Structure formats: C-alpha cells, structure tokens
Image (tube, rainbow, N blue to C red):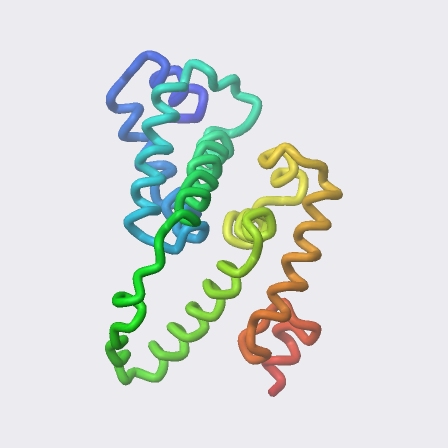
Length: 191
C-alpha cells in the first residue's frame, strides 16, 4: 500500500490501515523517541501517543510532507512535552545512593556499552534544540532542508544549531570516542 492509499484508508477508518501504519513506521519512530528521551518505556508511550494522535487527526493531513515526517512532527511535540514534564521530577536521594550492579565481563560488550553510554550522556547534556538537530541529522538521516521544513526554521538556523551542537559534542565526548572531533574517524583508524 503506497502513502496515498494508506492515508485514504486511514481517513476511511480501515483497521488494516492502522496496522499497516504501525508496521511501516513503528520501529523507526521508537528509535527516534528513545534517542530523545533515553527511556524505553517512555519512548514506547510516546510512540503509542503519536499513533493515537495521528489517527485522530488524519483528516488534517494534507500531504505536504511524507507520512513519516508528519508522524515525526507529532512525536517531536510529544517528546518536548516529555522533557518539560521530566524537569519537574523530584530528586530521590535513596535511589541515587543505591549500588550499581557490576557489568558483564565481556570486554566487547563493555566497550560498546561505554561508547553508547558516553554518547547518550553527551546528547543528554545538549540543549533540546541542539539535540533535536543532531538526532534528525545523524539518526534520522534527514537533509538540512528537510530538518528546516520539519522544525519550521530556516536552513541557516539548522546549520547554526548543527555547528554549535557538534562543537559541544566535541567537548563532551572522550577523544577515543569522538567522531565529531578535529581528527575524525580517519585519524582514529590510523592509531
């Protein structure tokens, strides 16, 4: 089923179209949601809410973008609400003082886990606007003009935010994990 048929079927309230929508875009939206909130349960909730809002408002879809871009815009708005609400969480000292269990002893898993942790930690330290452009550019593989249209900002603003976000990532990531660094991947491979 192509996008036009999918939209027409959704507007006609066809249950098979809902299933096709979820099957087509669910995994990709979940990865994006997780990259924004770093909590699998919250990411699943955000994706579910995204689909619910999309189905309820399918009559407003005008075809100016792809279905995925439209769904991702809904997801992005829900993610922003998640971040706003998360800032209201009260610090739990007892939870913070609990001992962290030792990781598995497989060095490859430890290295991948360390790299992944460092990357997510660096992303978390970026502002919401800088994190959005990094995720859209490098995780969603969107082009500058697509990001600009998606976020309703100019291409120059996207480029500026990417520039500053990459600069921050350079500062936040350790040299051996830093693909945003001056030397890049070619220099790291030579070592």
